[in-house]
Length: 261
Image 1 (spheres, rainbow, N blue to C red):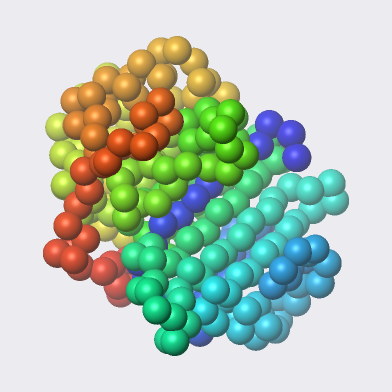
Image 2 (image 1 turned 90 degrees about the vertical axis):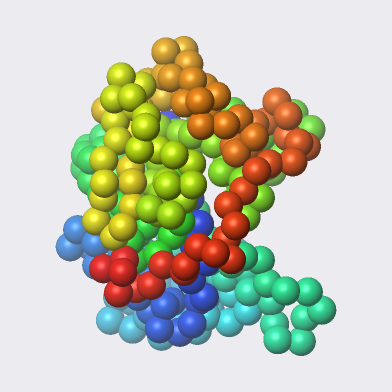
């Protein structure tokens, strides 16, 4: 894919078979099949044909501890993604991660422009609702790499919401509880677009197009907001080892499917 857009969703909602069904069905059905996979797999390589009428296999893959559902759409590739179940088996010695329901995805930039960037943003917003996530992001792959990777590692850093907010990106979605903890209600409209979204959350966006998300003016606005809200609440690749302030997640109720709907 070229000029990729990247998304990530962070949810505390356990991935039962029912939850897995809801998420995979939502991916399949969005926009009349706009994002519906062609192929899928539990592991690489992704070569199994995706059957929209029978998603029992993908549900089974995802619902088990350490389960995964990998998918692709388009020839050439238009959409790809991974749903991760980071829950440990019951016999594990350590507790499961707080945000055990994790979804990552990518969209070809030219394809996204053809179908409409607003449709991609709508998809991420809808999946934010369906997954009952506390945080989600949509930005360019270049922006994500610049803010969450460095020369010392090929993998991303700071993408664990349990340890702090990963950063600010082109489009950011927050649960109401996380938005209140951060103090997003006081952000000036001159710095970012902010609005309430369906499913009990807040959307914070920097400009109408992701094409400009690496412009110096946008980066300065994001830095001004981070400085105002509290720098130690956000991961910064320039200080990747510093301890971050984080919400008391135990006091924040788990977003329910009913609330999200």
